[in-house]
Picture 1 (cartoon, rainbow, N blue to C red):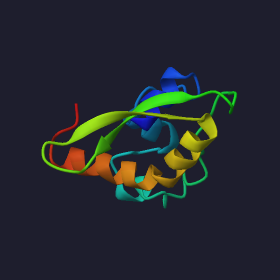
Picture 2: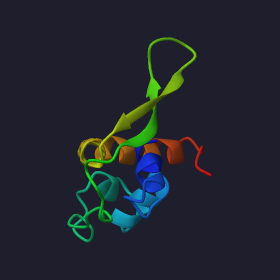
Picture 3: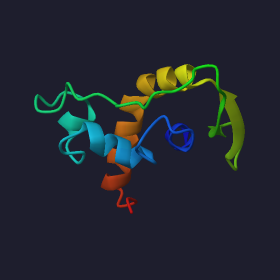
Length: 106
């Protein structure tokens, strides 16, 4: 949901995590690409549009306190969102791979 917030703020051209993974992986269905170990795409980087880091970006974040899961509004500056997205990229890649394995991809 972080990617959606960055997209809505004009920071990213990709509107969801799947599009973001497709932009940096040559074959998002392979483990090597998703793990960022593929020699063909390992150096591809997320492209960010220019942004004002003093602006605030609102996005949803899942909370894992109890069942059922819920989401809440978060507001942060674009630089913080970029740092979070860079740090969680491999987790998102693995999540997409797991969804495809389970047949949940759309």
